[in-house]
Length: 428
Picture: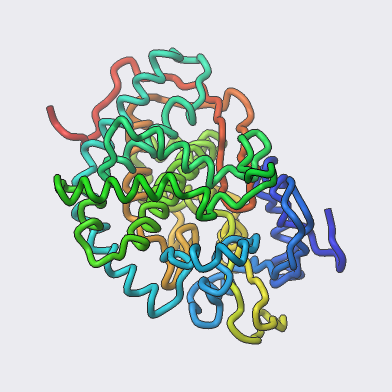
């Protein structure tokens, strides 16, 4: 669909059910790198004022790095404008703050999100990946189809996150429910989030998050009384105010879960579609770390993020007014021919690989190291569990212009007769 001026629509969430609209992104990069996008009423949501879509890598990086000129605080970071009454509440989250307040919160949380603490989860996460794949093998012997999302990646992401946070096993289903409510609200297959009058409501509104916040307060109190080696123990003992701690629990629960939950099946899908790259990786001829970054480039977990112009400016020759919404498109930047040679070819040894799948600038993903670690372990265990994989049907994708989610990925595997133990796997 084209809009006024011949610019393709990249806003409508329904477009993304058929995959990332790379043809549309290419038109925008080549001819309209900063393009006006209307916000019509879609999926029960009212029309909005419109926004500027930023699709070239250099411009995306400029917006993400300039936290002063392109604010996360003024209108928050989702394309749709929040209810004005909810905006002060939403601004408590680090994701929706600008320097210097953002820096203070990030420094406090980074004390908990240390590489050392994350590395201690390596053995547990590796065993979890191995066991989930073994269970998939039991339900679907070689040649039989299974759903990678349902059998492996959903649980892998969620259970790793709850270990890191220190959430009791009995409560893990709550985190899944809350994540679904926040992430999948645009998808017609998911139960709608409605207010008392039956109207669509922002799942990030105070009313919709009250249950999660109450749980965060109770969990923090428990950690103060019973400290452990987990992130919630560190946050509960920090200088964070209660409202800030609640917002961090929300951010870590949703972002920490859905980053890996989206990236993991997306990466396996890319491998299944590229046997010429899968072979060298599985034979050890390509490094797993570089492969993970390339898989993140071709399937970024987040499709878009919004900023608001703090003052009148110009971007790629386009005048932008103060208060205008400016939305960067990660998947487009990751396929910009000006930066990536042959960007639609999977190249697991690609270097350099300056993808923006974890953002850039002051808001670069705090959990990027943790996400890369989980993805590396999963791909190592998948390689060691089977000799080949094939698609057993088309993937089902999330209807969303925000999260690059895969709801179902039918695969068949040729399992190894005696699965090999990775050289880096824990002994015993």
